[in-house]
Image (tube, rainbow, N blue to C red):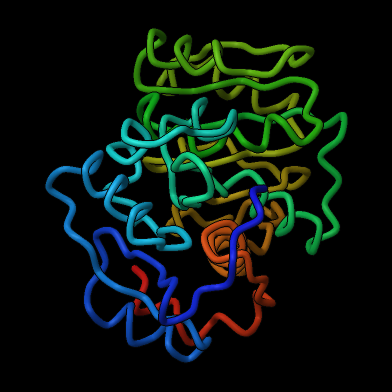
Length: 254
């Protein structure tokens, strides 16, 4: 992670795509944040560097567009998205979901190494949210999308050493594959009936799935946004904030 100076009145933090309340909320951390234009992102990134902003936080709606206007790191390039930028040398972009997921799962005590998982989504775009989990030690991954072609696109981004299988989420083969999995990851759409069994662990990245009466265990991912914001701020400002201290800011940053 590039070393950047703390945000001060002379070196503020840029906000891309956020409501004005976000800048006011960040003052609680002693940060001076400024909402900047978003119509010409390459020009805006150059201007922020010239004006000595420390970095930028990126609203989810602009993550893909900002990725094309900065120099992304490996994780951000794979995701095709950037959620934080540091203006140290080049405009260096990161995508913090993988690190935040790792921290959240570490807090939960769930061991991913060697486990098998089924990722269930609608298309390649939302299934990409689950890809960071595949880099935390999973051995076998099934990807269930609306179409086999979308599932196959996601498989291309699996890390070396992970065995992957493309599935159509409406096909009965999804249930057969799920029977051999430890972890069910939902990135979009409803859970197909009968997928969850008592021996499964559910990781819901949508906030809408439920274990219902299946007897499966749900991972507590409620701290994921806090870990993610902590990583974003560390990259964009050079300052580290404990995730639990950031809870009051979240409503203004969504």
